[in-house]
Amino acid sequence: MAGHQVQVVALAAPNLPVTETTSDGIQITRVSRGPGAKLLGVSDPTNSVSNKSKQRNVMKRTAVQIVKLAAKTPISKYVQSGIDQRMKAVVLAFGPDVVHAHDLETLELACTLKFKLKIPVVYDSHEIASERNHHSPAQRNRAGAKEEKLIPYADAVIMVSEGCANFTANKYGISLPNVILNIPDFDPEKMEVRDLRKALRIPAINTVLVHQGSLQKNRGIEQSIEALRDIPNVTYVIIGYGQHRPYLEDYVARSGLSEKIKFFGPVPSSQLIDWATSADIGICTVVGKTKSYLYAMPNKLFEYTMAGLPVIASDYPDIGKFVAENKMGLTCDPESSSDIGAAIKTLVRNPELRAKFAEGARIARTKFNWANEQKKLLEIYSRL
Image 1 (cartoon, rainbow, N blue to C red):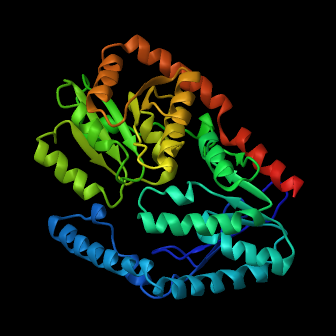
Image 2: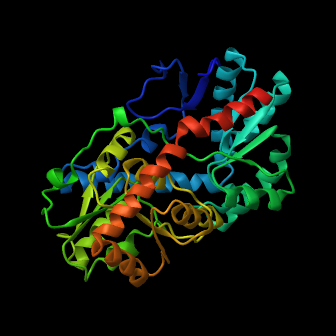
């Protein structure tokens, strides 16, 4: 990796080896999660093959939620301490020159290693830790206090958008973090069109809209579903998994929209761009209920860019600016189904405009791709 030897230390996950080396030479070691690990690894209800297995997995997921309540008690400190000790042992055996902390959960351990090994720390935060969507107010306060204490020890801070970087700098009085977009590489020779129309038997006359990624609250999916209620000849394909998917499936069924809304996948992340390529419009209507979502630059936005799709996106500071400046789609109020619907109608009824925005996306992907973005990361390592 640009002349560097890389060791990734991660949490164990079902069906993944404890150790492995990737094709490009990255060493990966996965450590045990400790108590409750088997329960946390139960099957996702969205992977169920029958209603019976789905009901069983939903019950298991309920048990998982009960276990996760421990995260709000002192018990969680002992669990995290065990994880940290196992990770620390792997890192010490490797003997790195730099430790790279992925999100706040690993920053405390990284700072401990910084002083023990006398090496620099990179803090790479993919969300605003004190403003995460699924956290309670108490969890956000704890995260903010922890980050405020530890972030001054980071020798470099990385954020995923200008909004996140500015917010973090102002909140803690630190230098402006480096912005590195969480963006895939663009390699046209490796792209393969995977046909959603064929897989889901979508009529040729229909315009295909796609949403892909983790299915959680405040992703604007419900509003997009409602927006399609009175628009003919469209199919909205929702690709992904997550705790919110069973609710969304029931929501669609109760709304009588099962012919228009199709759930697909989950599919391997390496195939997301390939499947998106066969759609006509990408939907990226994240709802900014927290600052982390308000300033987000979601993976799906860049996957649509790589697929050459026109997009409909939230009219927010970072997402909206990216879409407008690259002339690759329309922006809207993600909390308004009527506003989303107006944008969809505009693109559905205007193939020429869709083609113009698709060309904007194809131009954007030649500039915004990992081959260019990685130079920022390598510069940080070179400086350290």
